[in-house]
Image 1 (cartoon, rainbow, N blue to C red):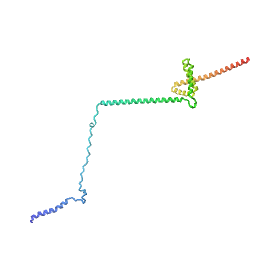
Image 2: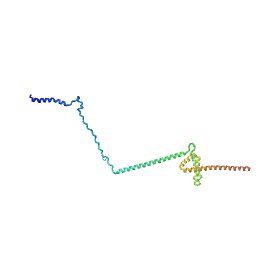
Image 3: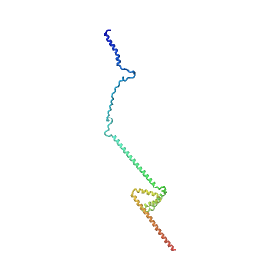
Image 4: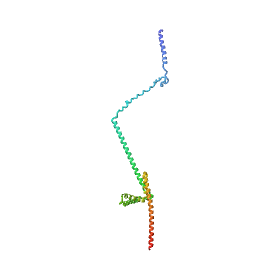
Length: 242
């Protein structure tokens, strides 16, 4: 073989001999376990900074809510008037109900007070006083007074039955009349003028009664004295005549 041809062949053989080494040197070394990838073989994913999402723009209230009308409609006016009428009727009915309840409670209070007052006038069982026969006797006495004064004047015809009835009541029903007088006095104390006049009349009546009793006692004593003197004279005349 010629020397000029040997040089290219040697260069080609050298290139072939050196090529695998160079190729193996450039390849990366694989791990022992092919299933587990190495950290170097996995390239990190580049992270980009998270930017906040833009906030939604506030929608205009003019677009979401309808505008109120400038003037009320006839329906609104009618609704307001109906509402006012219903409130007025409710207030009036409530006031009438309250007034009726007040009147009813007052009537019940008056009834209870009247029944309690009448029950308080009755005599106690310990007194032994009975209203049925005593009341009948009082009515009979008042009728007798009206019969006695039927031919008299109007004043006597009005006062005589009352006087006869009052005297009979104080004689037959003393406990009941005392309760009645105490009740009348309680009502009279609410009016000072009437109470003063009652006390004055009572004092005068007591004075007249005591004076009348004293005068009647004196008149009785004088009469007994005169009767005694007349009896003595009569006895003397009879004794002389005999």
